Figure 1 (cartoon, rainbow, N blue to C red):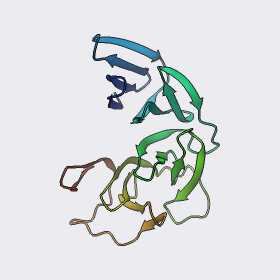
Figure 2: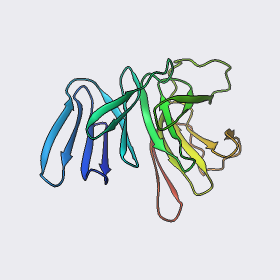
Figure 3: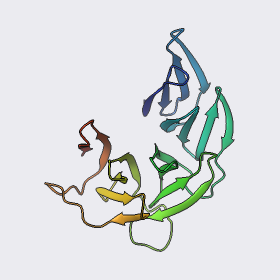
Length: 188
């Protein structure tokens, strides 16, 4: 299992599987329904009445009423690792490349912001694995090789000054914000 997500609108738990597809458990009937059987799904996010998914070889995908409505049409962000519905109303994604990607609710790519200082989007091996947001409108981005990054949603820039004790430069697998606006970081 790569991701689990409770969907309050449908009262289901989405299950994203490695080489096993996408399914959900209907909590009312306690039944499992399989939507796709073989593709690897990495991330699940719910916003309003929609559920968004990131899968191997596809950009952001959106489902409504348990049917696919939109397939991502981006040439970039083709394998989505992390999906986050931010306070600015956009869907933000990390993929198998060196950027954070801003999508609208229709899964259209709006803009990509490179995090490694390069001028070109590439699949260098570093990538964003997890995304969370603090109360100051900063996206906390956990990466495969670059440690922890912060991206400000208001200025649309990466925040250079980040103080952590100790400094985090390893792989970050998950970031969780608790009810006190504390950020918990799971790193290797």
